[in-house]
Length: 231
Image 1 (spheres, rainbow, N blue to C red):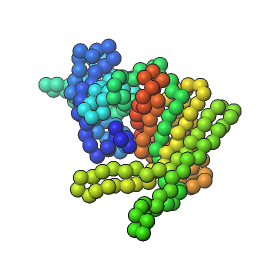
Image 2 (cartoon, rainbow, N blue to C red):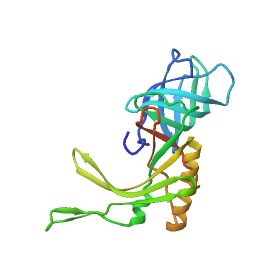
Image 3 (tube, one colour):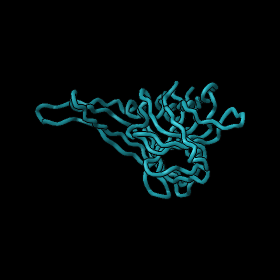
């Protein structure tokens, strides 16, 4: 998954409840005002207003763990239908993520406001036959909590079949800790960073991508939630 979810697309897959993998149901995942919505026949017999956890496997994304899934709509007839709004979503290509025991020491966030902060435009110099670009990486160490923050600015290059190369500026923040924390602790650190952005630059934006390194397999996993900190 590159640069997070494509919020203009629908994703198709199967979902199930914990310890009920043999009772999978088809699901359509889409976005509604930056919230993830799940439309499916999956439902529990209890009268709940939300499900604490739903597991899924989606084409093009892999395994997803949905947390705190509030029921937005329900209907009954020949089949029971539910539309859930997931608060947190954890994406992994190879395995489901156990959010109960999840701890992380390193996470990485792409936020485009950093590239706007730099205020640098790419341009092509014909005489030199190359692109003029600005790439930097600054590191800061907060010793009292053993946290290293790396702020970087780089170019993202995508190949498009009909239009050629699509080159855009990107800004990213990497957080590295000596002691592992849970995902809510990671969000708290990121929220503090956003406050710094607002103080120094006057604005921030919703992140484009939020990923973390799995301490179990060592691979990067993606995390998504509707960041309403600025609203």
